[in-house]
Each structure stands twice: as structure tokens, then as C-alpha cells.
Length: 121
Image (cartoon, rainbow, N blue to C red; front, side, top):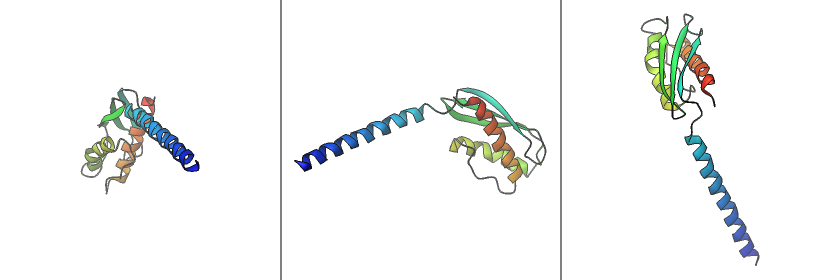
């Protein structure tokens, strides 16, 4: 009798876990952000005024573009070329800075974070 109750209880617990896991993945697929294009800026780079444009589609980061900057060519430009794609791939600004361009990387991340703040649901 005890084994039957234990098996039934385990079945209920397992079913609940499966059901809750399924619900969680559905809400994650909906995305974190409202669709649209948002702008953000940062003064953390070598020079102030770095601006980005972030496009959200399907609730996810679809594109990041640096639209204005005064960063040093050959140094800051390395971050401008590499970091936007990394952010889109990771769906986050929690990506590694570009080596040798840490200030430009910080500026891009901050500007993207500011843009995404506007897009939060």
C-alpha cells in the first residue's frame, strides 16, 4: 500500500515539474522586449557620445549597430566591428570586451543596455 501511494505521489510531482517546465519555455520564447528600434548612448568610451541603434524582432535582439562614435580608429573600431554581433548572438550585453578596446566595449554595452531599458515589456 505504501509503495502504491509513493508511486502515485512521484507521478504527480513529475507531472507537475513537466507541466511547469513547459510553461516556462513558452514564456521565454515570447522574448523579453517589445518589437521596435531603440537608441541608447554612452560617454564611457575614449570620447563621449557613442550611440547605438538596437532592433528587436519577435521579442529578441535582432540587430545592434553603432550609429555614432568618436572612438579611435584601429582600436575602438575593433569593438565597434565585433561587439554588436556578439551581443546579438548572446542576446545579452554580458559578453567579453574586445581586447585592447575595453573602454569602447564598455561604452557599447552601456548604450545597448540603455536602449534595451526602453524596450522592456
